[in-house]
Amino acid sequence: MIRILLFALAYFAPVFALGFVLGTVRTLWLAPHLGTVGAVAAELPVMLAASWIWARVLLVRMAPASQDAALASGLAALVLLLAAEAVIGIGLLGIPARTWLAGFTTPPGVLGLAGQIAFCLLPFAAIRSDQ
Image (cartoon, rainbow, N blue to C red; front, top):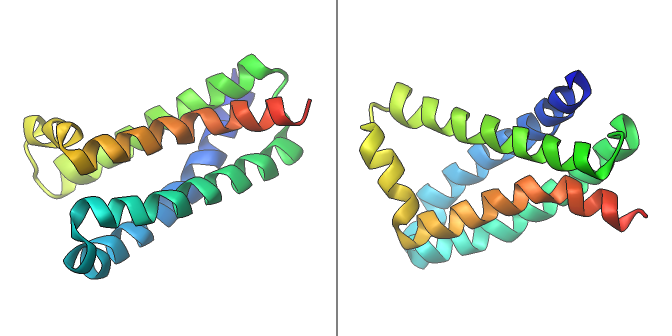
C-alpha cells in the first residue's frame, strides 16, 4: 500500500506542477486566441505526453508489483490531482464548490476530465506495454 501511495505521489506532483504552468499559459495566451475549448485541446496532448513519459520513468525507478498496483497508483494519483485542484479552486480562489464541480460539465471541463482520467490510466497502460 505504501508503494502505491509513493508511486502516486511521485507521479502526481511533477505532472500537477507542469499542469499549473501550462494552465497559466493556456489561460493567459492560448484561450484569447483559440477559445477555451481550443486552448484545452492544445494543452491536453502535451500534458498526456508528459504524463506518459513520466509514468514510464517511474515504472523503471519504482516498479509497481503488478498491473493492479499500477492501476491503483494511477487512481490514487487522480484523487491527489482532483484534491489539489479543489484546494486551489475552492480553498484559495474562493470558487463555490458547486461552481467548481459544475465546471466539469462544460465542454472544456469534460475535455479536461477526460484527460485526467487518461492520466489516471497511463501507469497501467505503460506497465502493460512493457509486458
